[in-house]
Each structure stands twice: as structure tokens, then as C-alpha cells.
Amino acid sequence: MARYKPLSPDRMTAEQKAVCDDLVRSRGSVRGPFPVMLHNPGLAAAAEKLGGYARFGSKIEPRLLEFAVSVVGRFWGAHVEWVAHSRLAREAGIDPPVIKALEEDRRPDFVKADEEAVYDFLTSLLHTSKVDDATYARCLEALGERGIIDLMATVTHYTVVSMTLNTFRVPVPEGAETPPFGPGRQ
Image 1 (cartoon, rainbow, N blue to C red):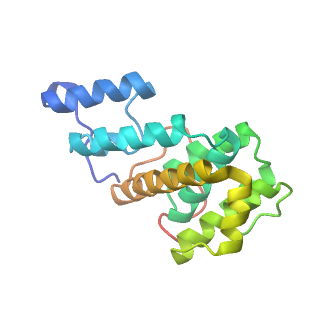
Image 2: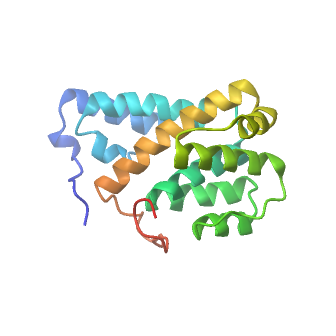
């Protein structure tokens, strides 16, 4: 059961309404972590800006970007994030066996070196809080310096999103199947 109550527009403050309107303009609706974050409109506005950049302003190609979001969402066990972004990763060109391996929390058998470089970079960072020189160099070759900086923005934003979704038990969208893994890091 969710640990928050979505705000109805007639109960929002002027600041909450303004942020809500911005979210609808930029994203089409208020979903994911934003119904929770609207209870703190300053945070919702800041998260929308970082998330807007990480998702729509990044120089990382969509295939690798959605893959990165899927890795982060799976690491944190964020069901809502996984449902949305694993689908987008498949649609952007990530092979289904790679997505299935992530879902099962095992290392995929990579065919593409850039996917492996992003995976190794992210799993090293998420599991150890560090990235060794060899892994950094492979990711730098795959993404370039700007791409690594954008990758860090992606990790940062989707970690906040994942933790928010998990903490407030935001349910997967109606009709979506809850992933077979438990919430939170496994």
C-alpha cells in the first residue's frame, strides 16, 4: 500500500499547482515519483529540472541511456522505474536477453562493447562507490567525457527517483505486471 496520498488539484497550494502544471507541460502527466514530490514543490521542481536534463537533454544515445536507467532502477529494486525503463530500453535496441539478465540480477552476456562498458561502470559505482581506471577508460571510449558526466546525472537522478518510489511504495501503473524481484537492493 502506498505511503502517500496524491494531491488533488483543488487542494494544492499555488506553488504546488505551478509545479504540477510544469510537470504536465514537460512530461504529459504527473507520474512516477512526482505525485510524492509535489508535497514538497521546491523538491519536485528541482527534480524535474535534473530529470528533464538527464532524460531529454543528455548526449547519451537513447539505447544506452535507457539501459543505464534500467541498471539503476534494477539495482535499487524500483518496480515502477523498471517497468517503464526496461521497456524503453528494449524499444531503443537493448536485446531482450540483456534485459532478462538484469531482471534476474545477473551479469548479461554482452554482444555490444558500449553496453558492457556502461554496465561495468554503473555496477562498480553502485556497488563500491568507485570506478577503477580501466573501467573508466572503457566508458570514456564509449561515451566521451561529456557522456560520462551525463551518465553521472542519470545515476544521480534515477537513484533519487528509485529511493522515492521505494520509500513511498509507489505502485506500478495499472495493468503493468510487478517485476519478480523484491523492492530495494537485493
